[in-house]
Image (cartoon, rainbow, N blue to C red; front, side):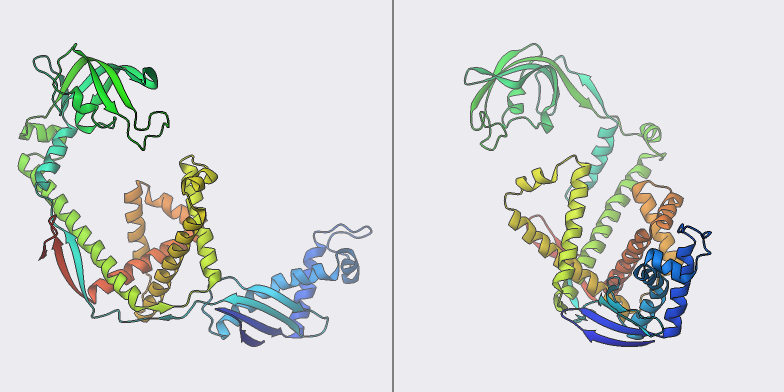
Amino acid sequence: MKTTLTKLKDNLVSINMVIPANEASTAYNTAVMRIAQHVNIDGFRKGKAPKAVIERHVGVDRIQQEALEILLPKYLGQAVYDNKLDTITQPAITSYKYENGKDLEVTFEVETRPEVSLGSYKGLDVKVEVPAVEDGAFDKALNAFLTQHSSMELVLDRPSSETDTVVFDFEGKANGELIQGGSAKGYTLDLAHSNFIPGFAEQLVGHNINDEFDINVTFPEEYHDEKLKGQPAVFSIKLKEIKQRVLPELNDEFVQKSSQFKTVEELKADIQSYIDNQRETMKKVNAENSVFKSVIEASSVEIPQNMIDREVESLKADYRQRLSYQGIDWDSFMQSQGSESEFNANLIEDAKTRIKNTLVIDKISKEIDVKLEQADFQNKIAQMSGAYGVNPQDLLKQFGQNPDFLSSLSQQIINDKVREYLVSNNNIEYVEVKSDKQTVEA
């Protein structure tokens, strides 16, 4: 087979290949026999009609198409390999010349991976910001555990406080008229975590059971109901119950009943270990992102418009799918964005970023000769099954049924390996960022 390569615009190339006449004829005859097995022709049993009859019945063009389907998988792949092309799309046939007894000429186009110019990606000095451990983080985590196992008890001997949960009836009026949906009986509200109008929950503090009183508030200017935006309102209240959260006593007996640990010290050690692991995970993620950002900024690549257009369509498809899961109509979503042109411009920038990131990772993976091994897939599947609560065998079955899943998994593993390499081969200085903006070496 002879091939001639022609570079077109951007990253598009055209290849003309010449397939020997004998192989083209063999494929044509095979195509005739295949078609003969599936057509009904008067006077002939299936598969027994002569070639000339088949040609008259279905047409030479149809037979040639079948013959091309027989030949091209082998020859297209061979042409790509012989010309050392790094392709990113499937070959598209643009023309062919198929004459009986002559060499077959086929021309196809294919997109190749844009060339990436890598900057330095080893030996860089990179500062990585790590948020300081929040003051009282341990106590906060321990209190959250106790709160999960707390109980609510009625309060009979004091007024409501800002940490209580109250049950009350209310009726709201604005401009002398009842507010639609602004009344309820036996409504329960956690005063410490209220999502009511600002100032509402605060005025429920300091009252006793069976107290009847009014609350005066003003609806926010950005309120969803046009009639109520910025309007004053009065809510008539009858307080019916006051409840307080009671935390369990922290002792070994409680720990044994509520966890897998036997002592308070074991529970505390586990909480501290969790905080430490969270911090190490954050350091790792921040380090990977910071180093990768430096590598990306030092690299350059010309991204063809057709790649950007495809990525934009992919991003839109992802948006549509996520919105459909939430029951949101695409047109309604677009209206909520205000400016469609601004939304599309942001998508284009996101597309460029994603493409460049992928191309740089692929380039580095080749430079450092990343290998994919069976253990890599097993570890990744184990991670995914743990994160999603899915049986590893079920995941493997999905991968076996959908080749795209396997391709995506391979890319994720390559990404992980490249990022790990970058962190290991650059000089990282961790800087702890405190809430007052001061920094210290971590």
